[in-house]
Length: 368
Ligand code: OSB
Ligand code: MG
Image 1: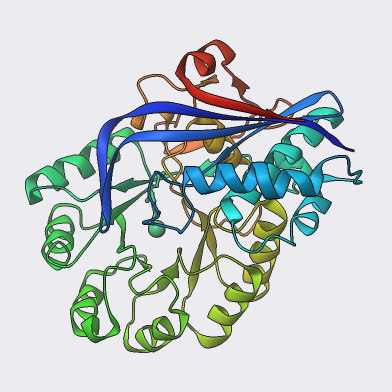
Image 2: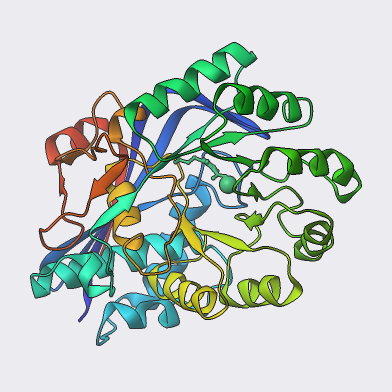
């Protein structure tokens, strides 16, 4: 196989509603799509880097630069046997996992299309139905939060995650536990706390949460191990895990009991599968995180979630929760039971809507 051409595109897409987490608010997304022509078959992927370096050091701008000036030169004119080989070819570049992950995932889609099989099957997936949860941003009031949770439960979602930050934590959880005592509930702090805050986090033990996601520093695995010792509630790591080695260290130190895998954050499917397998061997369940993706990234998240150890509902929700109109056909829909049926078509199994993509494109560049 050989990548003949890459097209980078930036799309401007307005979120249906602003999304607030502990370190910022998103209104309009800048969606970076990558189209790879692999021997005449087109593979699609989305780079999940954000507009600002607040979740990860990568941004749309850094990803564009690294893809064009550093990653594409490593692939240009090179033959390889399968998509599985791509991540090793990109190794000379340190970090920039979201840029790498987009390039790698597009090649996986192309390989699956070339073979005429669904991507999830090529990856070794087993689940034909994905369990879905929602991620709910920080709200102005407790009533607004409770109403948002009720709406998602009525739609069928199987678990609720709320974003928390200092001053918007224990009261919020307490209120939700009063209103929804039975619901599968978890919180995500996006690194908003320090280890010294442990007595406050300990209060959350009283509400039988499924997990607390990324309470401490994004580069601080060790403090998570110290915190986990003090808590009954499972810690789930998100931002801290970019590599297999970090996952190995986190598990060995007891820094978490659950890991959220994001395809972009770990640099693509080969890395995601290695982390998935490591977690499986160690009795650590994983779930698929989300990055406010368009349908292209959402389709990849669905494929990833079919692997056997994706044992907990992921942050994978319907296109309509984010977009008035998505860029894939069909859109991602969630059943009243809170599940997504895995597509049967080749590759990611959703068709990019080229006309709509064209209309939303603010810049594009071809590399050949
Ligand atoms: O921490 O999981 C996170 C969105 C942007 C950045 C980080 C996170 C999130 C989400 C959204 O929680 C999940 C989704 O796409 O539905
Ligand atoms: Mg998170």
